[in-house]
Figure 1 (cartoon, rainbow, N blue to C red):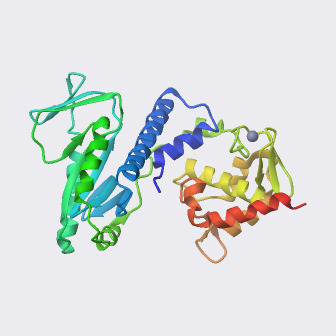
Figure 2: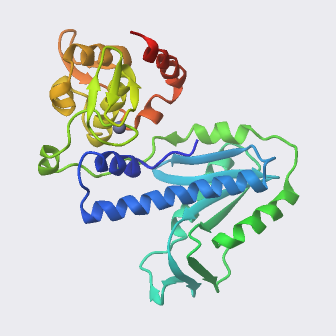
Figure 3: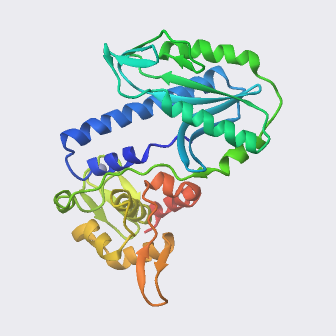
Length: 326
Ligand SMILES: [Zn+2]
């Protein structure tokens, strides 16, 4: 499943609880567009190459001391394509080994990240005797960008409107042979993805909206019943789910801290039912203890509910019956 970047999770969660400043708003828009672009690319691959199943989306690898984040990897025939996606807007020219954007030279080479990823995967394959070719692909996903490549480079550089044709051409190389081994080898080098370096200032923390945020209208006018939380917009959510979800929202915003009861109490605000919060923490979160008696708090994965409890969705779906309980 294609996941939102940690930065996007953080900004979206924050945006529900305070008015974002100008810089945060622009960063949020950028991240949202990027995510839409990545999903469009996923769709294109599914549409044009439905027979390709050996795909890895969004993986971070560590090989020796090098860390690389890769947007998409696919195996077609005997070539592994490493795809780096950019959502840049504007006119880009690659000439004399340097990039220009709207006529101005860029200080960095947009291809560098991709080249590092290709080198890392080539080395991993070599070390594990995997005999597959590795090719880098730089895909510009913003339809409002124009790409001109004057240099000869070993990577494939594609503008948005060139993607369908490229994918159709790949179809020719498809074979029924399976090399599933290469994926499990790469997973051995997988590490957790980057977390945002963003943190709330004390001032921002003070002004955060407290309480349970309605997932439908994003307002905070909720009323807690025995088994459900009901919003003034009419939306009804199972109480356990609402509590767990709200705890994960705290977890995203304060991703560098443990979940502490004291801080969660403040985060839930005046409508909190403390006994219920304690029950939820005990049931769904992992306690971290320093000694037998003393507790630090609970483990914080720092990610949104859908990802944190990805493997427990069946359980939360079953809880939906509680809406019928009296
Ligand atoms: Zn609502």
